[in-house]
Length: 69
Image 1 (cartoon, rainbow, N blue to C red):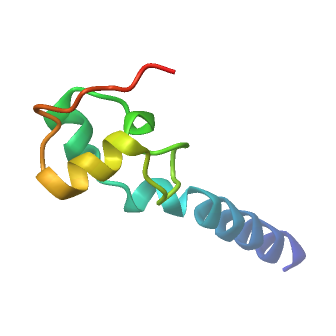
Image 2 (image 1 turned 30 degrees about the vertical axis):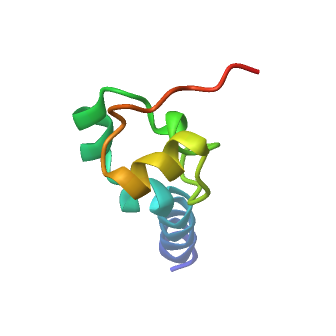
């Protein structure tokens, strides 16, 4: 019984860790041919970079000029 509970607990923890990736929308990466980190500071993070804010407003990256540091 303990082995079953331990296996279930591990499965739940792994599922929770990968939940942000399951909620992501990879259609955007395919459409724009850019990685997730082009619009987000890190994979699985809801925060947006300047490119992400531009995309949210215009629904495309066409016309976006990347700022050089």
